[in-house]
Length: 186
Image (cartoon, rainbow, N blue to C red):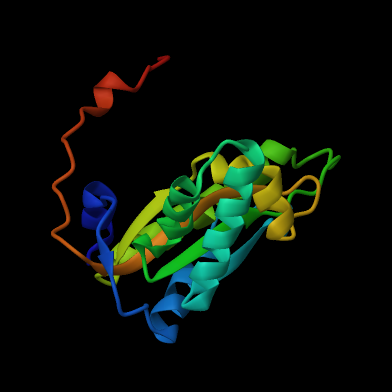
């Protein structure tokens, strides 16, 4: 896929099916992610892959989080929460590894760098004909999930990238006029 077409037409794919992207496809995703802007070459990111029983483990972690934050949650709610990771055959959690107190690279810049890595994964997925959906939601900010994934105190979950084969057609994104978003100081 031509780069400008990809950048102009990228869209999220909510319906994802198997099989799991192969190692060659995943390697291409990670190589794209590792080209994210990175002030001082901190490489402020890490990635956790979930597939197969890993999706079950992530679902259990989400259910534990739900039970912790909502003690009134019944088994039906918890079971629904356990199934959330099953919306894709593979999920990549993108983690910002934040080094606090760096004078020239503030934490927000490190998180944005990890966000750029996540965006590169989504773009590289679509470039290869894969479907991707970047999700955050409350689990990305939950202390139970953070602990379960082994995050350090200053780390941040940038998102969960759901990946798989497109389960439908890529939608045509709406046309937006850049003039509606650009202010020029001439």
